[in-house]
Figure 1: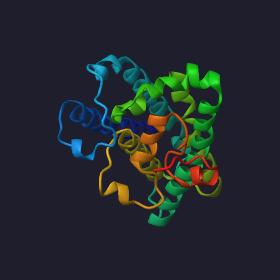
Figure 2: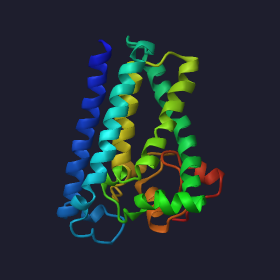
Figure 3: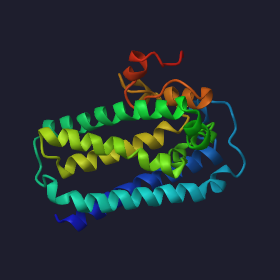
Figure 4: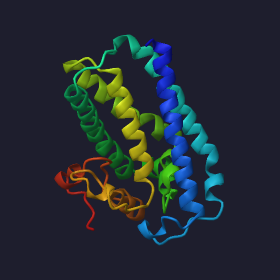
Amino acid sequence: MNALIFSLLIIALLLVNNLFGLGYSLVLIYTDWLKKYRIQDKKYQKGIFFKRMPLYLLNFSTLFLLAGVGSYLIFPLLETKWSTWWIIALQVLGIFLIEDVFFYFYHRLLHMNKFLLGKIHSIHHRASPPFPLEYLYNHPLEWMLGFIGPVLGFLVVGIFSPISIFTMLIFGAIRNLREIHLHSDLNLPILSKIPLISKTKHHDDHHSYLEGNYSSIFVWWDKIFKTELPD
């Protein structure tokens, strides 16, 4: 594998994931197939999906560009051979842990600072009730600063072990699909049973109350810092 092929793989992964997110969103907005699993009773605003499409496309293009160019440039630093499964798993877990610490404090700052909340983060909070592609509905500055978390994760984990290309692919797939589902407003039985991982309702309540539940993946940050909303 060379840098170009790896970069194209990353782009293809994101494209497939977000096409899934597109279909997922359209099903929720225009059908009642999954209505029994919805958390909020609010109806989606008429025409909201297509009104927000320009910002979706802008942020999706930014994601494509940063992920594609970034993966191409860092390819020489990556381990291209398959490591043992537990090393890959530990790398993925480590990156998620570090990213989630960053996200918790970054997200909390976006709410504590009135300027950031009013001018930047409030755009994302127009997503109520949210649907899958709303993870892309952010101010472009907020969107780009959010990439600091994964980058920090890769840098810190890379100190202890060379990052595998498979770690990047697995992390990218899980992270992107999780962000898509996290904004689905659905409480699906199987996914809601995974321990220690924040449920869709955890983030859905954050969208409803505009405070608390700042963590994205691991609920313990909100428990430790006393920002968890009551069920």
